[in-house]
Image (cartoon, rainbow, N blue to C red; front, side):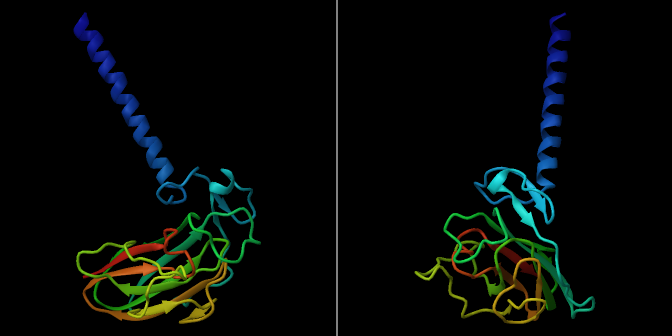
Length: 206
């Protein structure tokens, strides 16, 4: 009888773990959260905020990159948390922002990076070589809130166009095509405090 009870108890515990795992997976399918971010809401243009200021806002895109770009395409999502599209000025330290690239690994050669700004604030995309033994997010911003980008391999910071500009505004897309050799790179947004606020990801070139 005790053995039967133990078996029933173990089965219930296992079912609880499975349900917990399913719940975690469901959360991961929503807006990606930065470390330490509060809440888990996802919003889209035209909908109310879920989770208050702790939700990533997903803007509707007003433009798109050309369908035929050279080489492999890496799509980069830029996003931030906020209450209103009237947000402007310098982003504060500690704001929740994200940069997510897919795929995170591509073959060496021509690579086209398409950056879609789904957030409220203006963003950009800069490609930097990653030093051996280091990982994304380890660069130290200077007093101006930016990291050194003198070794930049390329940049997408122009609204609805390729190359360098004044920034990719909310709901718009920018892109750039670069030639990358085998190695590790760091994709970043280098506007004031954006790197420190979490906008960086490693890109591996094989």
